[in-house]
Image (cartoon, rainbow, N blue to C red; front, side, top):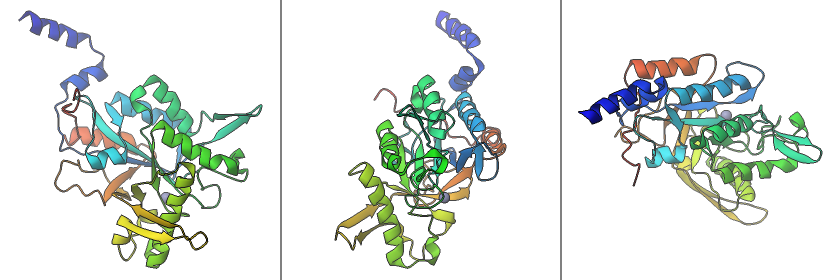
Length: 306
Ligand SMILES: [Zn+2]
C-alpha cells in the first residue's frame, strides 16, 4: 500500500516525457521509422534539410521517446532500449559535405557545428545514448562533392580529408552503408557493372578502415538491378591489382515506403526496408500518426540487464 502510494507520488512528479515513457505499453510488433536525410544545409526543400531544423528533429525524437539504433541492430533484432522507449533509424544518403564538414582554423581541424555530424556530436554529448548510432550511406566517387563528404575545395573540403572522415565515423560507432560509387542506376547496368559499383565503393571504405565492409546497401534511385541477387553477395576483381573484392549485403534500404516493420514481425524483410524522407513537417506527422494509430514499436526492455 505504502509502496503503491510512493510509486504514485513519484509518477506525479515526473516530467511529461518521462511519464509517457513509464506508462507507454510495450509493442514489439510495432513499426519503426527509418528516417532518410539527404543534403543538410541552409535550405529547406524536398532533398535538403535546414541544419537548425535537423537539430530540432533530434530534440523532437528524443522528447517523444525515440532513441537511435543502426540498420545493423535493426536486422539483427538487437534493439537494446529500456522499456517504454522506441527505436528510430537515422540514415544519411549521398555523403555530401553538409553531412560532415571540417573547418580548418590555424592549421587545426574541427567538425563544423552546423554539419550533421557536428550537430549529432553536440547532441550526443548531452544524450550519450545517441553516440555512434547514425547510418551514413556513402557515395565514394560521385562529383559535386558527393564523394565521402567533399573534395577539391568544394565547401572548403580537401580531398585528403575523405578517408579520415570515414575513419572518424566508424571509430565513433556509426554504421557506414554502401550507396555505390556515383549513385548508379542499377536497372540500366550489366551484372558485371553492378558488382563493380558495389565492390569498388566497399574498397574505398576499406581503404579508410581496413576490414570494414558495409553490410547495408541503399538502393540508388530506388532502382533494382535486373538480377536482385547481385545485391546480396558477389565479387569483383580489380584489373589493376588482381585483387578480388567480395561483398555480402544483409540489409537493403529503399527510398520510400513508410515506417518499417519490426524485425520480430514475420513479414519483416531485411532486403526491402522502407524509409521515410524527412522534409517540411513530415517527421512530426509521422510520429503523430504512429501514436494515433497505436502502431509504434515500444520496447518491453527485456534485453536490459542481460
Ligand atoms: Zn542517394
